[in-house]
Length: 216
Image (cartoon, rainbow, N blue to C red; front, side, top):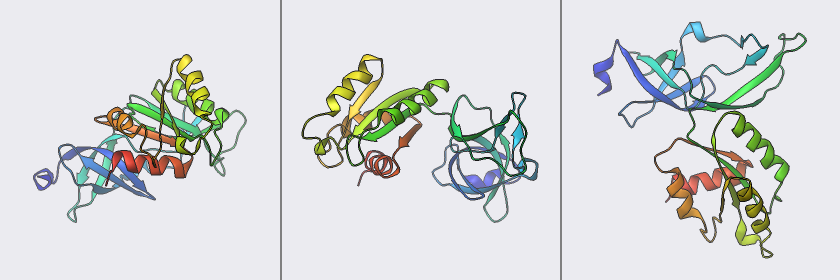
């Protein structure tokens, strides 16, 4: 039980971030602990030698150590080294300007499988967006799986040509439908027991993630 650890360090996984609150799942527990950052972490950005700014100190997927407060909340004291992470270009930070700088927003860390989600229609399939996600995943050394959703709306079966294209260059592709439930069982088997990242059009990705990971 967690009260045995009061006054000591507890290891856990960052599962959710809301504003300045970090929700950590302690090892062997099933209840999230709301944590804050110790003062030494509270800075706007850090600069690496290659002029790359990291705008996120603690992110979803990080393994951390924290201490419990008397009120049951926690304070993060250490962030473990990440085995991988995925990021995107971030907006410029005011006051952080000089020639050659690059800003990076880290999205998630320690990912086992990276699911790139797109619909075949509503909105229309955009292979350029998929390709950008693929490049981001490859640069981070992630296991990439492409999901083509809403195939129930694709009367002409246009998804099959895209499925064939990406399979031919080495990627696993799962056509799905949240209406007919096509591909859902296969997708559930893929996510089970792994730390997964779903990334794509917000409505499409969020609905599919909810159905696969939190079935009613």
